[in-house]
Length: 578
Image (tube, rainbow, N blue to C red; front, side, top):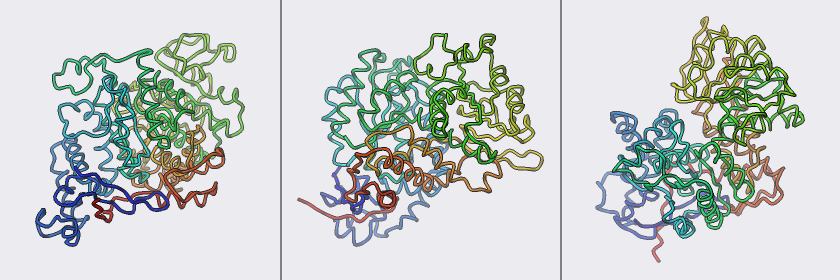
């Protein structure tokens, strides 16, 4: 495959693709290749005459043909394979087709289809993408990463493959999650595909099915643990920081304990965040903020219960805590309003538990009623603590029963109930159940997509708490502002920006999240909010991807972000053979 270079404008946006070779080989570079859309002039200038049928097609015509091909596939995995194959031969066309109906194709390139793809990764493997680091090559991580430096990498999504969606350890197949997330970075934030890098930290797998699978492509050993695991991660982090010191590293789908430890270890050492923790927290907070707009109440007047104290649940608790302190509550006051439960019941301070749960554990000395709680105490906590916002991240289907939901209703006229576990089979309660149990008073958002619910002749649209509303914009805001640290306040700003994109008429219908068709606009607003927050908080900002510095000016930041974004349209190709 021939390499290409990129010509940027002063804002860091790509103006032209520069081909370093001519002829038929250009069709094998998926950034340059236009397929049948090469114009007659381009075919002559780039020496492609005779390589293609004589009649050129427009991009719109190509999109229509591709849509038909995808629709002909028998199932979603086959549709995924087609779209990825299209991406591997023509990046622009693949993204243009996805952009033509983001709601339809997001469910194929990401959840829920990507879960099946992770499970079948080795058997459906077609084309290598990204970086695979494992114990056999981690000592050469810097050298391997430098092979991608010509692309001016701005965002990397990095996983150790252990906490893939609700599936757990998927070994080397977890890189499909990174591929999907980066496609959404492009769709939402306009970060060009050549600036994105998926990375699998393949430290082995404890999934016996994979270890026994003769077709398994990953490192066929049990997972590294303890110091060996930490040393591996540190070798990667140091290499990444050396090769891409100004790029954003998004940690993705690590196990609960490792997710918090790695995020906290590297938060000040590299530009990084964990989407499972912070992205989940922000998008959930945005739904709660929207609910407050409907209720005309304040966050600080609510009491929160998060059922499911894993990475996502504690991430939600963390983000609510940050928002409460920003509203003026003291640390103690904010923590007193947030309760968490796990498989052992209410998380309390006098029990042994992972360190990441400690912050939100409750002491019986502060809440005497805790001492009498049973293990199955959800109803009692709601009643005693006067919970008005109930959030589910437990993965336990049906755990929000009618008595549980009605207990929240007893504390507030408009209870906020967010059953976020996905897929739909793991949802704590269905929107239809909650609407009927509360006689239409509940304000609901879910983790999985649900159809609108009709009650007493009124249609209740159910918003989806999807991290895609947060992480692309956070990434663009960090890159465009030149932020050197990803601060927790960035995610509060992102949450307010997401909630601010819900029209008044949608709020009237009880919608707590924007619609997915608004993704590009929502991502831009999130990027502006995050960038402005960076400008007010950090003094050493310098966007290394743009020569047009904002000089701590939010309006100039807006100009940078707008002009940095890439849209899936064919770029001019310049021939430059040395």
